[in-house]
Length: 286
Image (spheres, rainbow, N blue to C red):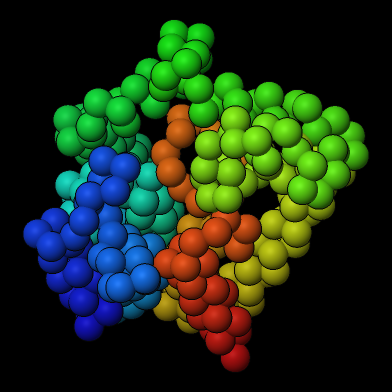
């Protein structure tokens, strides 16, 4: 509860005192340091949701249980959407949904959850800025604005394709080193990596993620209680969703959302949150 209430307070303060960067009020600036509360909200929410699901002995067929948990999920998701940070809100929603669905699902509950997703999606669309809506419409039609909203994705795809099998060499990628590829150290770092290390380097990154996620999944199967299982499942889902969405948006198969690549993208808050998740997963096995 303290972690959950703490991040909710930070997210509320962020809407009042946070500074706007790239159209979103998502950071506190403390001198040279920038703190992104949404990243730590993912970890705090996973801990609190896991504890709540265990305490309730959660039964998805129980409407009171389901509505209570959905409310606890919707609070941080809504506050992050108000920034607006659609990427982080989506990750929080996916993690919450997977943890809820872990206990099983019947047709009525599935229809209810589908309706909730539609409602949240409609509200979220209304909260998005024009440039964020442009990212989604550009995903549906990449050629609509090749020099505007579609520029980032086009340059990312060019960078990945130009890497070939072995890549251009570390530090020798023309798209990234000559700054044709935007945000090459954060959102589009996978494209930069694929350009310089090629298919082989990208395959190694895939293999490392699969190995990491497989180990966490194995811990879930060995979990001794509901809290451990829910906690590990939340961390597993967070890392999987962030990895898949970031790589997918680099390849043009997902809309650009600003989600970083875990353990690879430059960024203090994201990197620290990912390592906090790994620390919790490692500790959960004891």
